[in-house]
Image (cartoon, rainbow, N blue to C red; front, side, top):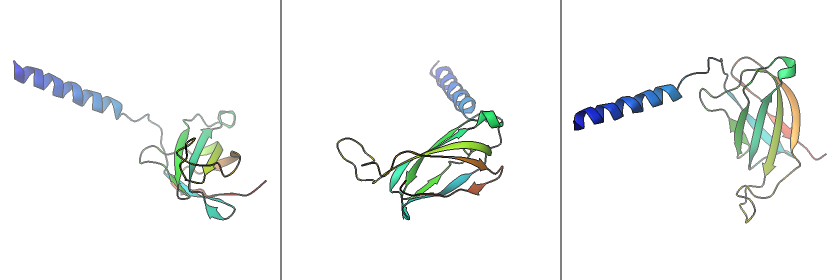
Length: 129
């Protein structure tokens, strides 16, 4: 009886893993790049790529961490390419009582981009406004 229960648990676990690992059927491309503020790498932050559906990009969006001036999509979790809105927030990387990321370096930066439908890099230079 123990063997049947163990086998059932194993099969259920495998089905769960396989079900969660399904591809959404969309061709995604690796994207990475650097983010600088006033010529220096942004120590910490977040970058968000939101597909522009008005211009024919059905999505999905991507949300990434910025670490030491660099961001990168995880394998299989890239962008589709095409028109996106980009939003960047950057911090000094010095954790404090209000934020693990530290003090904000600049107001949220926004830009529209058209990403290629291939693995690529996209760098952002943010300056004082």
